[in-house]
Image 1: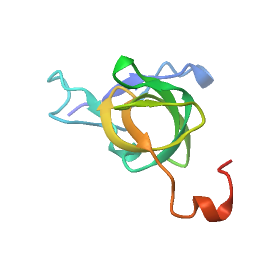
Image 2: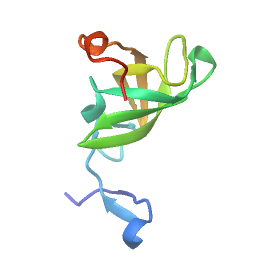
Image 3: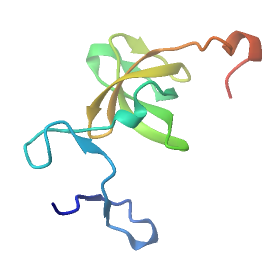
Amino acid sequence: MGRSWCAGDGSRGLLAVPCTHSYRNGPGDGALASDDAVLGRTGEVVVATRGPGGPGEVLAEVRGGRELFLAWSEAPIPRGTRVLVVGSRGTRQIDVVPWEGPLDGLLGPHT
């Protein structure tokens, strides 16, 4: 089976890079790529979500760094809120809920 390629970000002249995500039903079947690495991770809302009205943006802590995802939620979530990723819709889209970690109150505000 051949290697799958994804769009690169143009850095270092790379316009295509090997894909690291998996497919729900296999490549080429029309299924959206699911990014399971982000499930259960936390992040911060950088553009407020609008609940059913539309997505916002979340900077999620994943793969040893922070990555930006379109974020969907059942209810609006304001900018600056810490969230937990509870689902992956593929194509860098996630489902989130507000999250307060068990030590957040003890350690002070999240930075």
